[in-house]
Length: 446
Image (cartoon, rainbow, N blue to C red; front, top):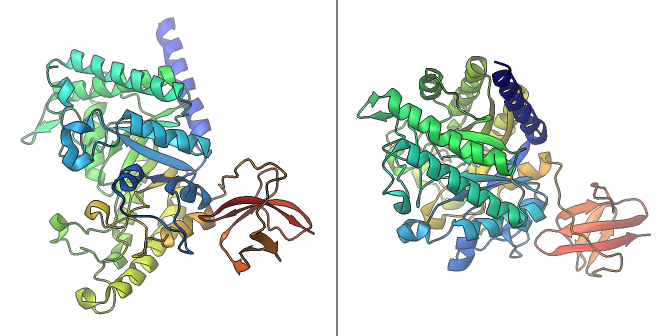
């Protein structure tokens, strides 16, 4: 009994430590595609002035303080869908850059060689010979342990470990699949719990302060979440999770959603947003777990809400999308924060403009940041300041009356004191100025 009480207290202490270190609001982005975009030479990203930028730097400059990265076991087995990216080597490169920029990192373990979602949880090819639940749980543990140790050895700091992606019917099908042909069995639920907890065990051993995340899709669907976590609650072993992660896309805009009454009606974002908020309140009351919005997205240039509907010009549609996504974020994010039980939101692939036909990135038609980026910049207090020697100056950058100038033209950017705190830059002194897409420099104001 004393041993059980000690272990319970230890688990609670680990959970509270994770919460205290991760409770600062995450203004996050899942930018997993950017290395593939660069490799394919498509979807270049520009700042608001039309200067081509590196995606990680631009995200940091706009205030994104957290990065989520999907990880596939061996994506070479589905090159058509993955391009071979998002393997450990690729994820390490991106995660290390985020760590260097001072951003917190979430690793999204999909435990597959390709896209994993509610209906697709394909076992990695190298694991196909594993046919027993115990064998699969051990494989999940060993793989997660080795992966996180590799990231740690490379210098990556991990804040969250997401164990499975959109696992609303389990993962690693069929062993960990809750319902098959509408029939749920306790054995498969138990299998899923063992798989999840194996990943959580590895996470806690390598990154003790990292929080574990159980991620489901359709954050507006309370019945789905109550069914999923209700099935788990019936079982004798608890799920070792710190957060319930949700995907919430407030607008239907995919081909299979065309029968939805709000299909591509970007002005209709409030319905699913409020359903998600209601679900969070109910689930918190029932299960007592904190939340992260692990994925959200919004059409960037296609909507039926613009004047003229489907006949509207593309520019008119883009302008309407911009207005509506700002309205969505301006309502949804403060509402999430006011619950007191949500610790962040991650925008899915904001650096995209129809890359691989994905229509909910956050770039304009000319590949510049849209209102999503502007909104985050306005509300986030995060801004990365590169270490600049005091003799490092660029005469093209100057400050006058608190405004930034590049080559004599007013430019967008951020101003910091030498201690890294943001400044208005109006008093005499030495400042660090970051110009979007250009770089940073020491600037003296006399």
